Image 1 (cartoon, one colour):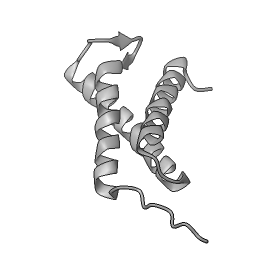
Image 2: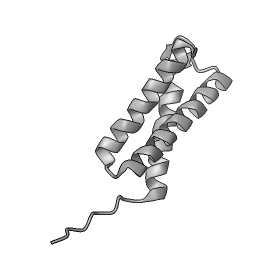
Image 3: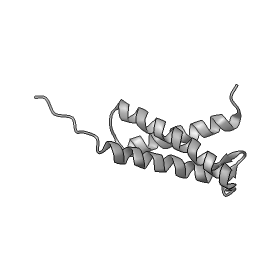
Image 4: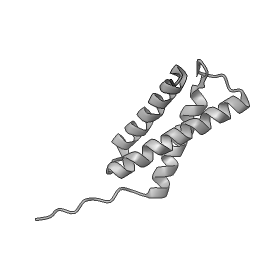
Length: 92
């Protein structure tokens, strides 16, 4: 059974990816990409926060500040590398 900290981190990262997709837009493939980017960025931010011993805004064992920054940086990088979503063509 996963720990409560893992579940909370997973929910936060998923929320970040979903909110980013809500504002940026796109299809289901882009949603999956943004969720994956948010999860990976959150984990990398958590690892960096633990390695540098950053304790600002910690919630239990989760380094919330660095994990959130990592998730958002990964989301913006994913958006930058994939470009704008393509507009659908109207079929008359």
